[in-house]
Length: 212
Image (cartoon, rainbow, N blue to C red):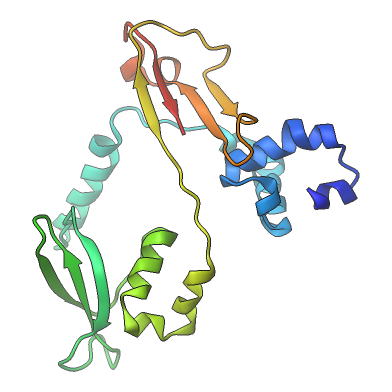
């Protein structure tokens, strides 16, 4: 807010346009964002790539069109995709080096039913969100002792809820894509009319709405 005030932005423009846009793009009120993050988001979406702000919907179920083909491609190349498993710890693996002279790793994961499995790997990629990365690092002394991972504790995360509603009747919205702000100081979201945006819901007798 202070950044825009100093730049000559009126309070009304900030309240009605900039604050809602930042809250929806970055999932946080403007007061909680750094100047760099706010300017970068506005430059990318409002100036450089306005078309990127429009939601692009998958034609069909995401699992069928994207995730299953991706898993099949991994398996065709000798890999394995194992679901319902959560990493408990990443540790050093005894028994010698991995690729070249690099250390190997032991990854312990939980499995359905309360058991656990252990895998040995030449490399581990933390392709998880901030809360999950924080939990893994906290449970892994090997990672917690390294500055680049210890810094994860200083990162903040925001809870995001996605909900889809099937209504008995049709609800006519002025536009198929909508921004929701102002009802709570720390919350914002989007509302989509999937009957108008996705082919699979076009003929539904009632409205199908998605809130993010």
